[in-house]
Image (tube, rainbow, N blue to C red; front, top):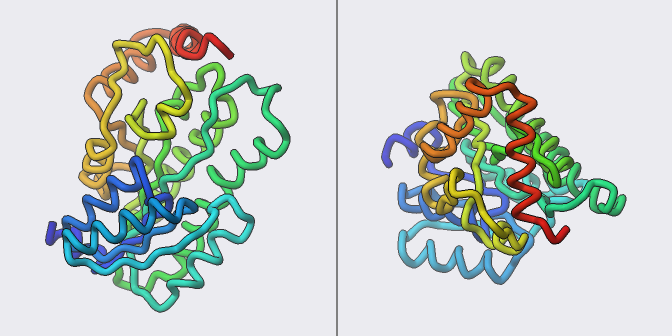
Length: 266
């Protein structure tokens, strides 16, 4: 716990903090004694979480009510906290409705791109430009197993998450000698409101549904050790099987069949 404060300082920013995995990161870091900048568009949940963390852990929070899909979301967020020396940033939110690609509206396609790609890229870029010589920075981008395999009914989501993986991997090697820890966390199905609101059915017994706290704890543990991580040993084993044991075309077929079965009403 003390190691995190000594590495990244007393403050962290969590984008998409109000619930699910974002709330799990917030709770875990508060337990480490870090003060938190919490950004989310869900103001009631954001305030409830911040009040709880301040009461239980005695930390300080800054609450940013922000739609992170807006064009200037990254600038607006960082302008509000430019006086705070935070050196750890975690980006969680994603637009992730399951559906057939041709059925999405143009506005939905833009939201995939803005929330999943544009805002995190601009946040990382502006964040890194704040760095001073000798400081250590940490960055976690939440990605997905879907970004590694590309299943049916998830084309724009999977593609944007694949972007996050390659983006993080590239920056990991580019910046590792400059004291920047970069990580893409490729979570599988996780018990969050977003996941359950997608109404999954006939869920695979091979892939485990993890709890948000498990995902957040594992990602924080892996930060600084590797560019990409997959929480959950079942998920890691399944990914190994799909990418090392059987040909990719069979992997895609297997994963897509599972998705089509889970969302057979689409």
